[in-house]
Length: 62
Image (tube, rainbow, N blue to C red; front, side, top):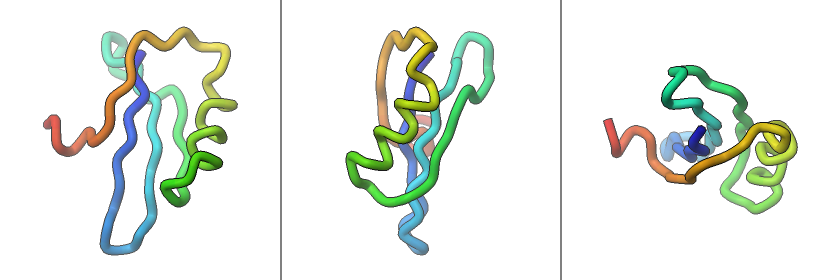
């Protein structure tokens, strides 16, 4: 599973997404600002799921 952070800059709404890439599923997401607090909200949502890697900018990778 990977944790991915992407954003919509026009509205300054940041969407943090956790994706199970092999299973092609979203396993969690939160929206908010770029703060550590928003990242921790996502972490709390997925903390029981093993994470193998982290990356940012899903739209940049597609």
